Image (cartoon, rainbow, N blue to C red; front, side, top):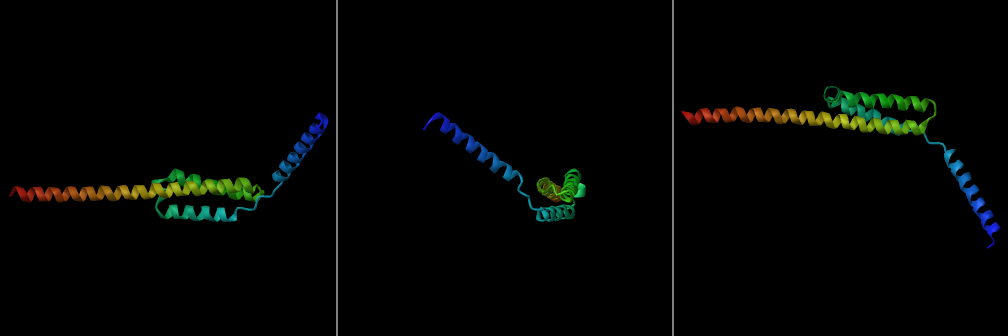
Length: 128
């Protein structure tokens, strides 16, 4: 093939790639209603586990991101809304995990205290 024909083919390929690229950019992202719903549920679950006490910062971050996602949906910025809703889910799950951890630690501390009390009783009875 001649050099000019190769150049022409290269230019056409580059133009086709540019057209495909622009077409991809124009693709409409569907509204992330299900992600927003999941984020709302995740926040509710975190709240029911007591995240307002154990993980208030994470819970607030989840709520803030959910509100921002809803705001982005109102202006048809669905990609941003989807990202924020996903982040809200992650933050809510983290808040729930921290709440579960705090409850587990409390239960462990209570068990340790009970064991200590029982050990003291055993020690007192064995001294007699």
